[in-house]
Image (cartoon, rainbow, N blue to C red; front, side, top):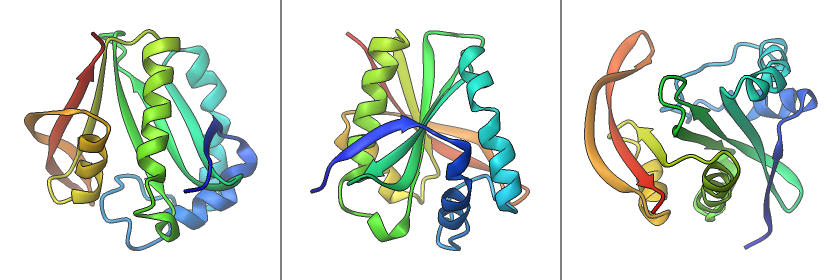
Length: 165
């Protein structure tokens, strides 16, 4: 496997992210980006989100090529908890890249952000995401009813979590 690295997302990543997220096979991603401009506007808010300790969003680089993203969303009411989310260009699926990116994001979450608990949530049908959570050592805690809204419909999700010892 090639080298997986994380770096903060840049506004200049907008076109590549739009290309990745426009893939119709991204069935489980809840946000549908409508344009490069909309993606650019979202990326422009990243620094402010970090300053407010709300979100930490990273580009996933594989052999120095932008292939996806991983982020840590902070629970603003319980600042010791964060949720990791991710997506990857379909051309790079099933190569262990997302698993490695999640491990790197987790290290940042526990060591730099001083989180005590990290959650990963996914729709029950998203078997690939579930395999990533399991490979990274997360424990299945159950099902959360109507926790996501996708395509105008509230959906259940599986909850996996890891706590720092």
